[in-house]
Amino acid sequence: MITGELKSKVDKIWDAMWAGGIANPLTVIEQLTYLLFIKRLDEIHTVREQKANRLKKPIEDPVFTPEQEHYRWTHFRDQSAENLFALIQGEVFPFIKSLGVSQDGGEDSTYAQHMRDALFLFPTPRLLANVVDQLDSIAMDDQDTKGDLYEYMLGKIASAGQNGQFRTPRHIIQLMVEMMDPQPGDTICDPACGTCGFLVAAAEYLAKHHSGEVFQNAAAQRRFSEETFFGYDFDNTMLRIGSMNMLLHGIENPDIRYKDSLEETHSGDAAQYSLILANPPFAGSLDYESTAKDLLKIVKTKKTELLFLALFLRLLKTGGRAAVIVPDGVLFGSSKAHKELRRTLVEDQKLDAIVSMPSGVFKPYAGVSTAILFFTKTNSGGTENVWFYDMKQDGFSLDDKRTPQPDKSDLPDILARWKNQSGEAKRKRTDASFLVPKADLAANDYDLSINRYKEVEYEAIEHESPQEILKRLEDLEKEIQAGQEELEGLLG
Image (cartoon, rainbow, N blue to C red):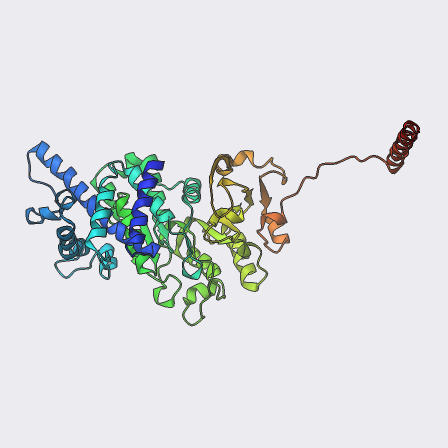
């Protein structure tokens, strides 16, 4: 957990960047990410160097050659502002852009592809030296601290992006990952990955709960690093930030690439993944001509939130699972496309659960009401009962400030009930969670909004009869009259 002292240091860096002329939050994040990545490369080289010294062997797979020693953070951090600026701009930054570039004409890594258009945007040597000094004062030896620090910086992007994109709160991501329980054999995809929050959380979960399998040998580690995590986005800045976010969390070579997932030009990647975790863009629409035809076969619509659900069904292997955030309108929309997509999830696939979230979860980005949809691709049905949970609080205030309120969170209860499905069958629909049979969903035109099925328990209140009330009023009036007469007597 990031401490108040660390937050204060990050805030000071942020303020320095702002005062120095870098006002766009995404640009601040991007430029800080480059510096953190340069620092991380030095840490990696130091570990390999220490290991080589212990074994009295040459360094295995060094990050820097002897001629590049001056590129290392520990070597240049104490230089004058002008020399530091010239070195990073002229040599170190081009060096990190060149990483992953094939020297034999083969395919570049996805990291190298994203870095191709990267720009070093620090305007003055003084600002760069100031930020390097402040970053150097932050101890980031611990992997968790480094991840928390980066997540805190990402959290400072306090405005929604285009097309309804906004950052998913980390605690909601962690809830979805824990409910999905990723396994070492999974291929995990986020087709609207942004800063790769879902993929990072999934990687942390696997490292924590399955470290024996994930890191048991070189082949397993390579699979974890290169063949487990897949992310797509059509914002190059987000792709660069996302790739480095993964690298800063220890995932060396994930498949993070540029792709407009809904376009016809990127169709054809069906049945590739066993687990999808996503919060796709809500707003916006596409023309039929530019939308992938196989998605339109699943649901004919221009609405991106529906097209993304169709995309998830296409991308999943049979037996693959998905946990995705959708706006409430998807659950009860009355258009033909809305109804058909919900019918498909219930009748043709296996709809597992719906967790309704309060409207303040995504503030200050947006006040939209949302839900988490959990389903399994079967292509042969399988829905029997759908588990509903009515989340009322998530551990933070539901206003724009989003003040932490750890004693007010439904998340532990959601996870506990989800893992004990046998105990859910007896719950009444007045409870926070309950099961709804498929027949009830079909009878309600596949409406999936929790309010359609939740029953409100009214507390009976007994009132006095009108005669009793009138009698009390009469007695009160007599008491007032007697008091008035007594007062008149005292006044003579």
